[in-house]
Amino acid sequence: METRRPLEGIRVLELAQVVAGPFCGTLMAEFGAEVIKTEMPGKGDDLRRLGPSEDGVSYWFAVDNRNKKLMTLDLRTPKGQEIVRRLVPKVDVVLENFRPGVLEKWGLGWETLRALNPRLVMARITAFGQTGPLRQGPGYAAIASAFGGTWYVNGPADRPPARPTPVYPDYLTGLFTAFGVMAALRHRDATGEGQWIDAALYESAFRIMEYTTTFYGRQGVVRERGGLQHAGWPGGAFETLDHRWIVFTAPAQHLFERLCVMLGQPDLPNDPRFAGATERPKHIDVILEMAGRWFAARSFDKAMDELHAHDIPHSPIMSMADIFADPHVRAREMIVDVPSDIGALPQPAVVPKLSGTPGRITHAGAALGRHTDEVLTGLLGMSRDEIAALRAEGVI
Image 1 (tube, one colour):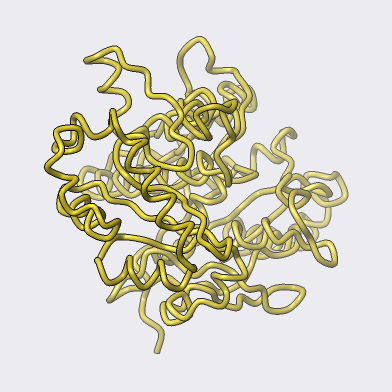
Image 2: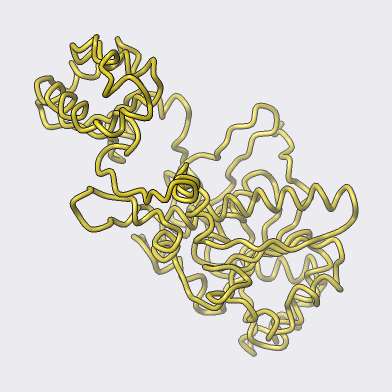
């Protein structure tokens, strides 16, 4: 018997496309929410045309829209807008990622939807947020990482700023938004009051800038690119004798001391240049040069063995082929075969793993409009003739 998932009973209407909004919806669907995603008739989500595909099925769409009910609906038409207004009283959450003001123009803004369902939680995802002088600016992950500060600090110190990949601001925003939705639902269940959530892609990138904001605000220091290593402590990517790459990190004092022993420099922590976390970053190049020579003189296997023996956090730099072959990844069942229209698709498993009520995957992102009739008949009680008329008019 399958375990009941914690979000069963929650219904989500997803008026979103590409990554951030759909990823938020997918996270909820994995833990039991009924997520109804709308797409433009005949066209669908732009993600269906991004990345590699097979027999017309986008791998990217398939993984980031799994577990959902997919319906076609032209939100630009009065009849499409009316269907949304009829669905809103029957849902708990609306996800959307249009530019500010677009839904208001269509009669689907927050005030309108709240009047239809005072318990509604509405999550609004944009590049720059619902307020401010840049609120109407278009944006994708590249724009968000540039404006949010993470692009500036990424890459070698002597090279132009490098784009962080994959499109992490989208995924982070989806994750932050899902957390916000959970918090808002908890508040609603306690008080009966719904609310709306303002999520911006650039703010997700900005939020993960470690100490950088405070460092500049207090001391006026602009954090620069650190290249292959973190700017604050020993570590980074190093090439071994047999031309493979390993990452290690030693941020804490006890790890730095272990690193020095491994490098054959056990007295280095007593050197005033390296004795404390304040002075050490100023002389980090000395340590990194030592580490570079150490790795270059050892095979990959030998280096991995010594890092393990000295209990220093480390990892090979893994390609996807490495990940597929790795016994730890397999033991954790992190790659699962998901049913789809073209057969089983290997996809990442549900994260995180709950001990009592784990999420699960039922199906990959399906064909355009797969569940349109089911939603309209099941939730709105429409007849086949009514649905046929809407389809003939291009509304669905």
